[in-house]
Amino acid sequence: MTESGVSADANRQLVHRYLDSLETQRKLSPHTVNNYRRDLDALLAFADALPGAPALAAVTHYHIRKLAAQSHAQGLNPRSIARRLSAWRGFFEWLAESEAMPANPVAGVKAPKRDKPLPKALSADDAVSVVSQAAPGRDTRSATQLCNRAMFELLYSSGLRVSELASLDAGYVKEGAYESSGWVSFDDGEVEVTGKGSKRRRVPVGGPAMQALADWLAVRGTLVKLDPHPLFLTERGTRMSPRVVQLRLKAHAQALGIPAKVHPHVLRHSFASHVLQSSGDLRAVQEMLGHASIAATQVYTSLDFQRLAQVYDAAHPRAKKTGGK
Image 1 (tube, one colour):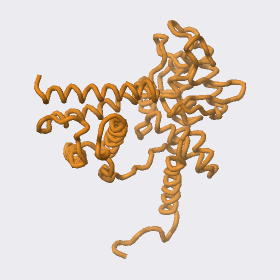
Image 2 (image 1 turned 135 degrees about the vertical axis):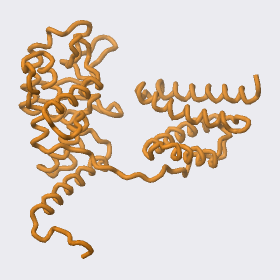
Image 3 (image 1 turned 180 degrees about the vertical axis):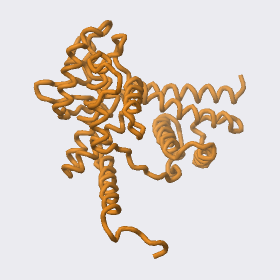
Image 4 (image 1 turned 30 degrees about the vertical axis):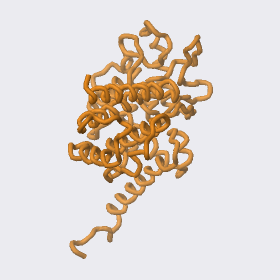
């Protein structure tokens, strides 16, 4: 085997060890580890293409800047480039613990600046229509429609991430190594979920959502097959996946004639902006959304200002801008 071949194999072994440490020591989810794997595969491919295919410990600041520029030229968006740089930075920090390196080659390398688009939220009327109205021609008492209604109501009522919704169990379960990561407490009118960073939080559930859940639970037993634990089930009696929730919500909104592209995160954004507009309590919204930083929640203040600006432009007699004045 050539020297470059030896370096390439050694590089891959290092990346494999790092990914294994993320999964076994840092306890990152398989989905997150796969994201790291994709980003580090790009680094491996770049190192393999360099003259002599150097060991990763020999990759320099210049190489990383060049790779980031190439990624941008190939059309990768700034957010994805920033994620790549973060993954590479963490890898080289880990590598420096066992390899002699003058410095982390990713240090100081920044992704291209990106605009921060505001989250898309429905109006209150559209949000209520999406979660409460039945699609034309559908049997509102069928198991599928009752399940959909309960899922959509809960997404908007409590601002859950779709992954949190799909992971809910019908009740708290602890059997052997298995323990529920989320469930609805009917006595307290709350839902307990495990969010990002394995952080647990409890969020209130509104009356309409609780009623929709009760209606769904009344027929859920007819679908339970292999796994009795999941709260939301497909027609085959298996746990509802986030992708199926997305597809069902999209089809439901289209059937109602809602012009916006509706997906679960739109209902989460709608929940946050509507609660903030009514209460003005940014900290409470942060807690209910499960944001680690208040900065992530502050974007909804921009949404609120945007709404106020629209009202002003439509209502104030001197709001209209004249050309060039």
